[in-house]
Length: 322
Image 1 (cartoon, helix red, strand yellow):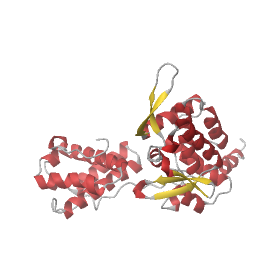
Image 2 (image 1 turned 30 degrees about the vertical axis):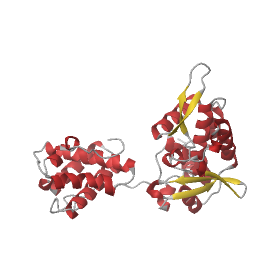
Image 3 (image 1 turned 180 degrees about the vertical axis):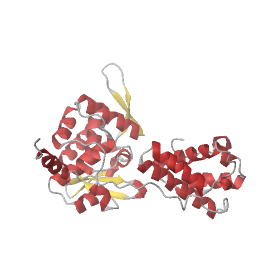
Image 4 (image 1 turned 90 degrees about the vertical axis):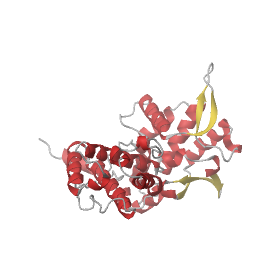
């Protein structure tokens, strides 16, 4: 499943398919009605399918036969092979699903409620980020003589300089870039249906205006700001489609340009967001303002991007001269 839930009984996990029509419908409704974010939906479905497949291997035939011991055993198994955040997400998926099934009178109780997940505390993000000079070198290395290069440079710069999630940038339309008080602003549709507006950094403004001028998109307000490009032949020119760039396309572009610029391995879409936030904080920006600009609901999420203490840590350990 890429975007939505399976709609045929043949696609349902065996334990769900063995139930009555009400149980099947309630199971499908959970993913369609309760989980709006497509990435969360995809992750939760994978977690639930993995658990139910495991249960079927232990001769569990009906949803109502699943007990807290089954859930606890599976979570214990996951802690040995998966990271703590992945295990905690799986437990959250099971708790929410069974809550939904309980309220729908499909099962009598929630077997996941009493199960405790692994303890996990993260004080700093693990996403690899670039130094400011590396980020500039990455943008400068992109060949802006081609349509693809112009688009990719503007796209990557938007993630870097607005701190936006890749999904919000990929989903922008031309009308989401607008003039206000002689400065271009970016209108970002973030997850959870949140509308977030950010003034454009002067460098980003230059990249975006050039992209609009060369692409010819400036007169099509409803068109995707960053569309896919149908590759041409001969001189290498491409034809713009009216399809939004997908996250995987963006990831491939970031990895391709990062590799060509000699950047470290592991650089991806989220690295751009982290790089922008870290640069902002290192140059005197406040955590509160960074939280607002990144559209984080919780300040603790913003603090994960604060790598300023890294330099202090390195200096401290180098004082041990042995």
